[in-house]
Image (tube, rainbow, N blue to C red):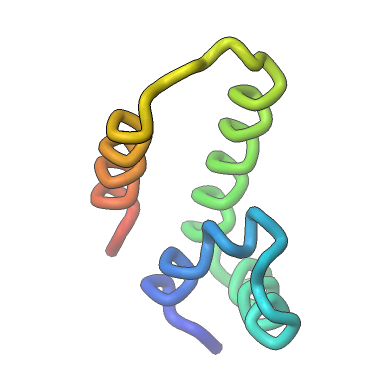
Length: 77
């Protein structure tokens, strides 16, 4: 089974549907056993849905990258 660190590294591609089939299966297996990663995944997924559905958030790429870096720094073990 993959580690939480590896899960977090692959989360973006998983959410975008770009993870290879083998990796996707490993990530889903990890999610079925790791409550911490499942909560993180679910929170990020819901947040992305809110932001994309509202279509009113227009931020620069630099700000977006900064936000992602700060979030990832807090969720990495």
